[in-house]
Length: 566
Image (cartoon, rainbow, N blue to C red; front, side):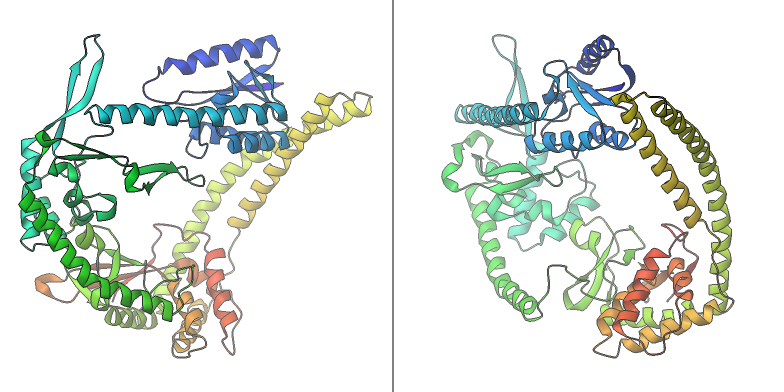
């Protein structure tokens, strides 16, 4: 049997040599079982309570599906996963692909091992979390920090009487403390967090993580105590356990949840005070004023959303949402107050100098006129079609290079299948032969699928001579449908697929915003293969939209044959 070894250790505090130690015992087990070792997989400094974010185990799963091995060897089940559901799902998946699991601690893994050890590992994790929180709470009650360091303070590292490293104490970083006081004073004086962040970035003052300042870093969320203006540590009050963090089982990422105030641990640390009471209260008063002014605005926005029955799918708010890019920083443009598009990095992160904005109606009108008058130009379409043919020929050559190796492997796999069938016909009915045959047939089907995909993907496209006229006809139908209420929604969606991106750059000397539209060649080619539509309908427009996705074979990211200024 072909065996692979898997090893993992949890944190940076553990020895990297732990992986080799685990591999050593796995090799010993493989040798005793007289298996053939064909590979190893490992994850370093990654917790075992989630498999999504572990590249080693994910690669193991992919190779198991490809039939590259017959058994997975590990030191113990908790090295593979400590999560009960993940372990059960992995066991079922490997079993489906005829891959067994074997560990040094438990032996051959059965459903009983998965159920029992999975439960024990889950209990272990819960118990470990409880012990860690108990220890942190004790440190906080004793006057030490219970978490990471925040902006404005340095970590004091001392040695205990026993020689252990102590790093739970803090001291004020005077340079950063002056920045904090400046932020509080400017905000209390009426300067917005956005403007404060912009000034700090212009003076090249590093932010809390050494990166640029943003309005969110300064404003934060008052209810959660986040942001410079809400950190009560600057008032000489340390609050621990305000938030708890749990992992999203679908993404493996941590998300925060607010704890009830009764569970907070508050301790006074006057020696760490940076902001005096008067300045703190001035900031809180201005925050209350802003909150009161925003209350009516928020209520109006919510009422608008409810009235227009926005669904959970969150369709684009406008014709061009998500398609506009800033020519200065490369960041996204978004719809802001007054129905104007502006650079999000300039507004929120204060890292872009592009302060210009453009009304939504003006930009949409320029884009629609550009699509009609320029993107439909016969010369532009003909040039794009020629570029497509050149690119298709290049990709076809690459595809043939891959397919040659797959064809050789296919011949070898078919030959091996024939040998196994001959052995069965001669009376050999061992279980290992059945497993081998299943593995070979799985690989044969995979190779057949790869070769079929290459044949379809790089087939010669039948591009009609009147491609530009057909394309122009489709666009005309969409533009006309924008004025028909029953067809407007579908037409807008289809038009969005004509556009790859729109780059906006401030014009020279304060002139109009310079806009460059990049068209999608895949849409041009896809639509030219649609049959003529005599009377457009919603179904027709949705068919156009789907065609732009399924037919876009060579017009991938970065392939921009149709670009013009609006």
